[in-house]
Amino acid sequence: MRVLASDLKKHMGKPVLLQGWLHKKRLLGGLTFIVLRDRSGLAQILVNEKSEVEKLRGMQAGTVLEISGVATADDRAPGGVEVHKVEIKVMVPVEHESPIEIDKPLSHASDNLDTLFDHRVIGLRNLQETKTFKIRSELTRFIREFLYKNDFVEINTPKLVAGAAEGGAEVFKLDYFGQEATLAQSPQLYKQIMVGVFERVFEIAPAFRAELSATTRHVSEVTMLDIEMGFIKDHNDVMNMVQDMVYNALTRVYAEYGDDLKLLKAPELVLTPEFPRYSMAEIHKMYSKATGKDTSKEIDLTPDEEKWICKYAKENDGSEAVFATNLPKSKMKFYHMANDDGTARSADLLFRGVEISTAPQREHRYENVVKQMEAAGIDPTSPGFSHFLLAFKHGLPPHGGCGFGIDRLTEKVLGFNNIKEAILFPRDINRLTP
RNA sequence: GGGCUCGUGGUGUAGUUGGCCUAACAUGCCUCCCUGUCACGGAGGAGAUCGCCGGUUCGAAUCCGGUCGGGCCCGCCA
Image 1 (spheres, rainbow, N blue to C red):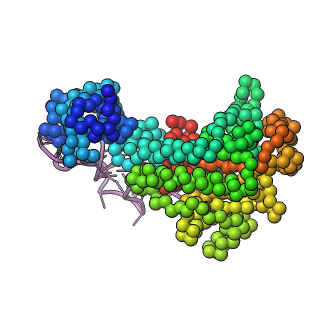
Image 2 (image 1 turned 120 degrees about the horizontal axis):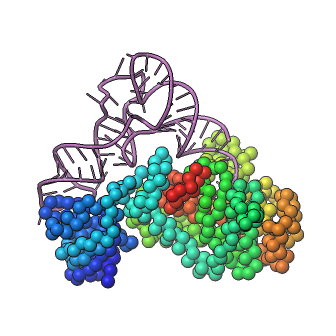
Image 3 (image 1 turned 135 degrees about the vertical axis):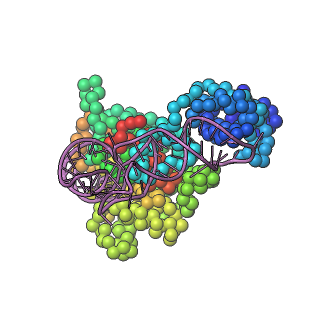
């Protein structure tokens, strides 16, 4: 029976069999330390026999090993336990030198990201990188668990679609058995349709954006969390749900992975259960007053304003997450609901300087959706939209939801400067491999 | 798409007002020594025509032009 590195302590004094990768060799002459990596972490193995050490001559990091020995308590060993009386079996020999180091932190300097991604296949075995993606996995799990607890149903919607869901944004086009298809840039229309079925739905899936953006915040394949909930009282219900979900996921990840986050030099979490809310107009005014730069004519928040309001909220409200509410109507999508004062019932959630989510209330009245569609220059009878409208025709309650960037959330939790650092195999305007 | 910026052994860097560069340092790799390492330590070694092409010059990693490949910012957004 295989024993995992992290379970060695439970087998103190007993024979154990470990399987994993050679992570590090330290030869001290008469004795040799081997560090073995498996899915649970690292195990230290002490080898005395010359003949056993010889089996590892020429074997590089990554060599797949089976080690049998005895779990032995020793204060000098990391974690107080190591394996003695060892017999080594090389399962998969590796003689090629590792292209990138796996036992020390890799450079995440922006100039070096290209090398980091070129060597991603092996670089991900680096403990720091592995931890990053373990934390990403857990963040996603906490979000899922929160949503399940709140009666949301997880759905999967098509990524091969006939037309653009949101209009405006660039889409990838491809040949679909002779028809032109696009890669879905958002599950927007489908998740609204599903409100008519389950009331509360969510999806975690890729979305494809063909915009020629080259910034630290953009990739062309993004992992989106999409939420939609029906029978809301007002826009606040949507913001509250997103807020509670984020608060829950962040506090959990800091509680359960605090040590790893500290090791990865992630910032301390500063968060209140209620996130501060400022209207877009207020933020423009506050920012202009504080910096002397007039942004009152800006439609959206500038990247600098996003950073500024996050810093402001952290210092004055004790929260690194902040809502920018009442987004301008001119930016509104046809499926959003407008306020009477020229703003939209939409809010951006900002965290540590970037927008991680947009959480609007939807226009749920059939006639209004048709009107807003026509105003946006979309033909309501076109094949891509007639199905969508059918759901409204047959009854959709007041509803709202959010699009939420999992990549950006992970990036900011870990204190990275570039979204790609939080993605296993990022896709941007000039990277399609690995 | 617009602006700015960078390109030196496998990896990370130094050198960039031309000559002391026959390219330095760290790490990784190879050989040897080392019985408690944990970024082990010590001795030695291999490994780069300085992204590519052209130009200026007695002489170019260094200056100029072009080209290819990155990065950052803006616009747009998650």
